[in-house]
Amino acid sequence: MDTEHVDLGMPGVRPTPGPGVPRTGGAESGLRDQFGRVASDMRLSLTDKCNLRCQYCMPEAGLEWLKKDKLLTAAEIVRLVGLGVNNLGVRELRLTGGEPLVRADLVDIIAALRKNHPELPISLTTNGVGLAKKAQALADAGLTRLNVSMDTLHHDAFLQLTRRPFLDQVLAGIEAAAAAGLRPVKINAVLLRGINDGHAAELLQWSLDRGYELRFIEQMPLDADHGWTREGMITAAEIRDLLSGTFELSPDPRDRDGAPAERFEVRLQGSTELLGTVGIIASVTEPFCADCRRTRITAEGKVMSCLFSRTEVDLLALLRAGETTADDDAVIARWQDAMWAKPRAHGMGHPGLGDADFVQPDRSMSAIGG
Ligand code: SAM
Ligand code: SF4
Image (cartoon, rainbow, N blue to C red; front, side):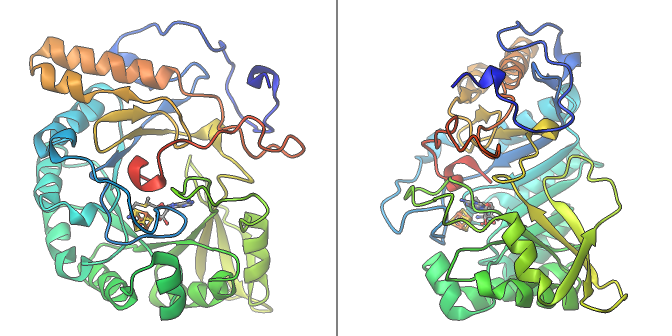
């Protein structure tokens, strides 16, 4: 199918010069793509390793870790973020993985980034295993906030989803993060049919009671086992339905401002008292590609302009070529070129067209950096 002529039903795409147009402008044009979007939100994966095996992300066994010399070092991370912030208009940074807490130098990396960029919002996405011990050090190093992924409060379902019995550690980690002042703690949850879809309202009540911000993420076809199906996934509409037995959701009047989550105000059915908000990230059924502001770098220093991209552009070799201003300029230009080629949309989610344009990337979510 010719994606050029497919109306993806996304409002607000700016005037399009069209693919194939060469990029013009130097570093001052930032991380702009050919459809007029400008990326200012950097997602950087620190490792492909993980201590859980979530069904929707990793295989049960048998994924080989990258060799250490293939990973960005702490110094390379600091340099890359510096180029992004000082030269290319990056305005926020999220550290992710794999599981970023397994990197022994995580606290040092955050401290170095904070020293260089006192005002930069730096957040972390973690599965929370081992967080209880590290939360205070992360806060002291200058982390701004974090998201902890936790899909259920039930031990059996947690074990089934993550294939590891670590729910209590995650709960302790969330508590420690809040105590360390890393607020608002956000909780990320993916629902799988027949495992934890019945736990959605309970998880929301639990989060509201503690002042945590819960966000449900639609399951995306980024699992190593390639087990995702459109029929099997729980859609945003279904998530709203699952919650509506207990809660009334109304659109949050605040501007979404490029955020992936659509936020809703939450009240108990029949009550006017505002309890808090819940977010739903509907990447599959209600995609927000038109307003995407993300640039992603994998743990081995490859730019992915989109989570679903099948094209990767290597920056590591250029980083390792040298540290002069000319070397920096080469990294900047390659990063810009990679972003210029960002596809207009990921090819899923247009009613009636099915997923004809969509081909699942080779990498699993853990190896991209969610
Ligand atoms: N290990 C950390 C964690 O789990 O929070 C950080 C990396 S993980 C890849 C980042 C986020 O991606 C998590 O919130 C996880 O639930 C989500 N995720 C992983 N695979 C997914 C998938 N197939 N669909 C939707 N979300 C997914
Ligand atoms: Fe690990 Fe996060 Fe993937 Fe779960 S979602 S397997 S915790 S990287």
